[in-house]
Image (cartoon, rainbow, N blue to C red; front, side, top):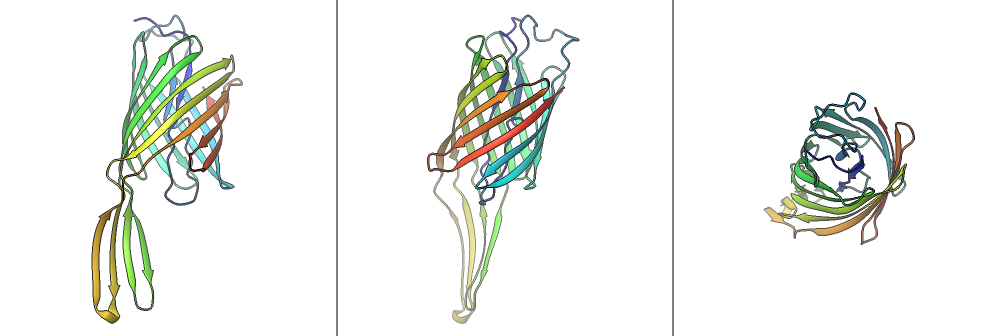
Length: 262
């Protein structure tokens, strides 16, 4: 098999949106950490000088002045499998497994993940177009199993209910550019589409009027996009990075992280 041109560190970034106003961390190390094989080394060929890739990182994400800390890890199992996961200070967790496929034209990884809010399955593709630039595409289907209870108890009215987020499909298109030997710049355009619409179940009780009402309804499907820019550098085995996320309606996220590879 023909080797891909040059070792490139490629990161696909997926943003998780928190229903509450508190920030929820997302690590660039937690979803996809891909290493293209060094020039001249074929897939399936052993290289004792290049051990299996391992990464442990600590990320800090800022939203509205609030810091969320995330511990993440990614470990290779053999040459084409890896396991990864993360846990943050908001008690959000995620764990997954990925299977990689190499060819002379592109790199592909299929992933399956479980987290506190549901399940996800997706595929990532990276296509090198030069020695320093790689095109990236990523798509995932996300099944939501979360629900949030709400309750109101006034003097003459009682409301009980629950809110369940919609399943979603997210798409990413972007590129990664090795601007300098130890500096990487990546940009991604991300689009999220809700497949079913959020589900609301409510019960209203008005004892004074002997009135009860139970309803289940679907909210309109959401459809939104956002942009991300990431700067990553490398000093020895440390990879500090900065990510800026922008939503068209004005919300912004800043994320600082540090990964350690060995």
